Structure formats: structure tokens, C-alpha cells
Amino acid sequence: MKFFSILSRYVTKQLLANFFIVFFAILGIILLFDAIEALRRVSGREDIGIWFTIQYAVTRIAKTIEIVFPFIMMVAAMITFWRLSKNNEFVIIRTAGVSIFSFLRPLIIAAFALGLFNIMVLNPISAKMYEWYEVLSYRLTSRNPNAMLFSSKGLWIREALSDNKVLLIQAKNLRQEKDNSLWMRDISITELNENSQITQSYEAYFATLEGKNFHLKDVKHIVGGKPIQTMSDYTYETSIDMQRIKENFIEPEAISFWQLPDTIAFYESAGFSARQHWMRYLSLWVSPFLLVGMLLIAAVFMLQNTLRGSAIIWRVVISIATGFSIYFLSQVVYAFGVNGYIPILLSVSAPAIIILLMTTSLLIRADEV
Image 1 (cartoon, rainbow, N blue to C red):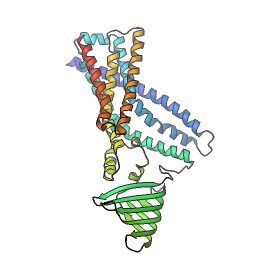
Image 2 (cartoon, helix red, strand yellow):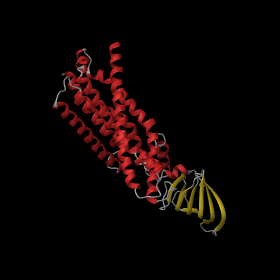
Image 3 (cartoon, rainbow, N blue to C red):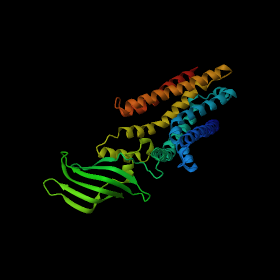
Image 4 (cartoon, rainbow, N blue to C red):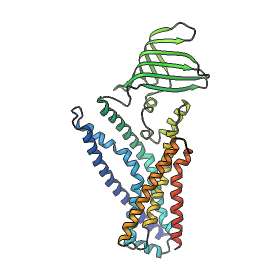
């Protein structure tokens, strides 16, 4: 038992050390290329300062790191297994009667724990960075240094208040101010019954959203069969807040793991499709299993009693090619799921299940040799 405990700590430390080395190395390379791209995009722009360029380059990292995270695990595992084979440590471990799966068990646990750490800690940080990157991109294209994540295309949102009352909100223009209030122009708030018939509506030239209250100015209150009532001011209470409106303008990748369940519930209660958000949420839950799969791919190709000369190069090339092929196929399956061709759960879990089954069967066969 003591031998297995020492061995588990040793190989786990090797894997984690290699993982963070590869992680920060790739992070530096990505930051370098993002900085070059940021400088290219802002060149010749006198309205863009160095601080904006730094923010644009750093926040751009978020989405790229999430894509390469499984490959970081695979490369770290390849380095770990290669060193164990090169130093004949793997031969000694096998000679001591340790099976491949007993040897891999602590590494699988470590990879799964890294996956959980990624979705529960790193993902919220990454989501905030990606959200701010979207804001900076919009400011760059709109040439408005104060622009937020809204556009002149306006707002159109639907909210189900109850089984027999639905709210439609439309605004032609909107802008977020520094005091975190939302300014809207040419806004209409329409109430529908269970038969989708209009019961009443409010039309205003100007409105602000503060908290969960719409403060309307120059309002026309329209009710069927009654004269139009005009008011200079009117406060309309709703459950919609700034965060809900903001989520209409950002991608699911900019919503953190912890906020996705509430966002999904909001969209479904409002009658909108939350398919993309469900895909995103379930794919985050599956990502730790994908990391384990990448670890096992590296084990299949790099855990050998002897690795010499060109055999190492070929195994590295084949394992990397296998990883990229799996990633490409997973994106294809994910696209089928987003478009509704296959069930959501199948589209997000199928790649990880296939990887785990194939690698496990190959390792069982290798363990019997």
C-alpha cells in the first residue's frame, strides 16, 4: 500500500508539473499572437490607447485557452509518459506487478479534478474576460469609446409573466450609461393574453431601466376599445433586469458555468429556445471526461517499455493527429446538436464516450500483453 501511495504521488506531481508548464508556455504564445493581432487592428487609430490594446489582447485569450485546454492535457501526459519510458521507470513499475490501470488511476483522478477546476473556477473568469472582449470589439468597430454590449439594431425581448400573460418589449435604440442604467428610445411594451391577443400596450419616446423598473417618458397607454391615454411619466414594473437584457447580446460562451442554469430557465420561461445554452452547459459538464480521454490517448501511444529513435516521433505525430481528429469530429457533432439534427445529450457526450471506450479497450489489451 505504501508503494502505491508513493507511486501515486510521484506520477501525479509529474503530470501536474508538466501540465502547468505546458499551460503557461501555450498561454504566452497565444498572448504573443493576440498582441500582434491587436496591434494590427488598432494601427492608425488615434482614438485607441495602449491600455485599450492591452485589454483587447488579454481578454482575447479566454476563448482560445478553452479550446486548447484538452490538448494541453494531452501534451502534458505525453511528456510525462515519455519521461517515464525514457528513464525505464515504467518498466520497473510494470515489473513490480502494477497494472496499467492501477498506474493510471491517480492520473485519471488528477485529470478529472483539473476538469472540475476548469469549469467551476476558470470558466467564470474566462466568461467575464470573453464578455469584456465582446464589448471591446464592439467599441473598436463602432469607434465609440463608451459603447457597451448593445447596438443600434435595438432590443426585442419576450417575457412570460404567467400562463395567461406574456410581455413583449421592443426598443429601437438603447445605450448603457455609467451609472449602470439602460437608456432606450422609441420603446413599446405590449401585453398579450393566452390567445396571443393584445390586451394593452405602452408606447414611450424615452425610457430608462433601473433595477427592474422601466421609467417611461412621454407615454401613450393604449387599451382596446378605449381612448388613448397620454402620460408624461410612468413606471412599469417587470422581472427583467440589466443582466437578462445583456444576455440577449452575448454568446453562451460569455455566460459563466454558475449563471447558465438561471439563463436557461429564463429563456425557457420566456418562450425562447435555450438549445445553445443547454449545449454549452452540458458540454462543460462533459469536459472533465474529455480531459481524461485525452490523457488515455497519450497513454495508448506513449506508455511503452522502450521508446527509441524515430518511434518516439511517429507516436507523437500520431497521437497529436488523433487528438486533432477527435476535436474536429466533436465540433461537427456539436454543430449537428446545435442545429437540432441529433439530441443535445448525445451530441455533447458522444465524443467523450467514444474516446473513453476506445482507449480503455486498447489499454486493456496492452495490459494483458
